[in-house]
Length: 279
Image (tube, rainbow, N blue to C red):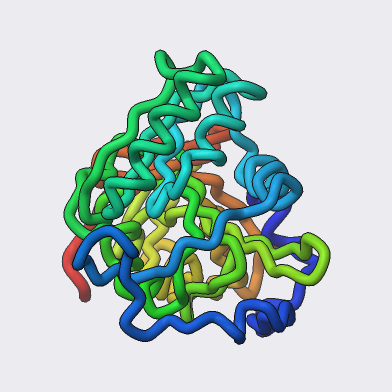
């Protein structure tokens, strides 16, 4: 995954939505015909090609628990269950859509793999998800963004049909016809001051700043200023490359576990990196 970060081939600043059909939708005051509810997002089902592309982009497997927030008629979860044997939870505020989803799951024989609930996606517990699918408006995505970052486990994949997350750049972006699809990987929280020892008896210290998955900072080796040449974060994996003027760059691949950074490969890192007070 760290290697993929080095080789991203998409244009990070391309957040355009080029399908003009979406521009014709009336998003103001949308309501269901049979009730007085005002819904945040009008119901526009994803076509089959988009559904499969989203599941591929999220790399859904039978080990995943997929949460579809604003699930509509449940077609994404049913496809994931049928084709990938994945468990799923669908959330929608519209009871008519939930009833349709339950009937669809029963008709296709996957009701044992999926569960649908009428609930507010801003309030429902999403912490069990390993994948989250979205087809919401960008303003709803942005409102939902803090919950995704705070409540999902690092490494959880979030994919969105057509709409982005504002200044949270996607880890991957692709086109399906004229539609943009976005993927984010929930990053571990690594900001702060970390210190660890190597098998050579050296002491490394870094001061990291973080904005979503983007990490910058400073480094020290045995108390002397060094250069933090690179800091790449993907999910719970963090790669740091540190160099001094008189030595070759040294790379550390760490995994964030229980408020410490443990070695993910190699034996150079002798102790977990622990948070220390700023000096």
